[in-house]
Image (cartoon, rainbow, N blue to C red):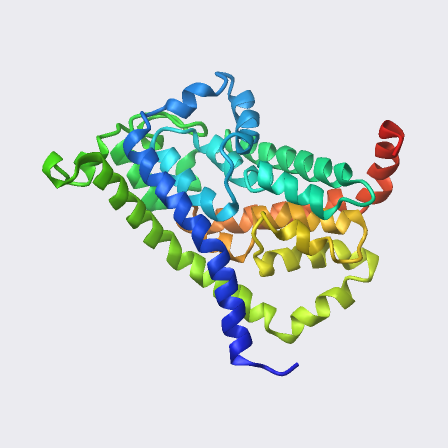
Length: 329
């Protein structure tokens, strides 16, 4: 396959321009949250029971819809405002799929023969996996897996105990955003504070997002990319190969269903693509670096890969007959 610099540039810019608007929306929202949202507001909306709180967090995407690019900066800001870390991680893993836009696009992409089989499978499996991760994190002190810089910010800004850890080292007391920014009313007050926070968050995560987009482009323009569909024709390898494809292609969750629906594979491998990609892809690895420690990102990606593979590889044979009997499709 001939290499064309213009193709490389086009692919890179298409990935960048697809994600940057959502990144900008997310960082603008993070600035608004930092300045205008009272501390613990969202936490107070969650059930008091920690297990139910985690499960509820997996469904928050229905009312606070975010794609994967948008959710990372918003999650960071919510955690600094007192949102439990385990709940925040559950939300960021589930929200790219558990939102009206992704549900609608999945329905449209798999309109024939029965769209609700893939919509229900993707929605249900994502909620279950994200909730399991959150429940595991309830038992792990946050200082073990959070980025040290984020941990210092928590210690400086809040005095709350986060799920997953106890005591002062897992939380601390919030000061006013204007005070943290060194602003006075004459400098523009809360609106300027929100803008400054949004700008700082945007520049912080944009570097990591661009690095992930660059790596995804390198793969997509290599000869390996052209071999993906041919290699995936072998049933045993279809699921992991499509999961790797979802990782390196770094497609937005609002459009990935429309693309994978064009592949002539069983439901199982395509479901793995649609579940794993929004939780873990190239660009997300670099965005996750702004929040998590490296070892945690590696363990999360590898464990999710194995679990999704084991659950979905025979999905069509196991679940479709049951779905057919229940619905009479």
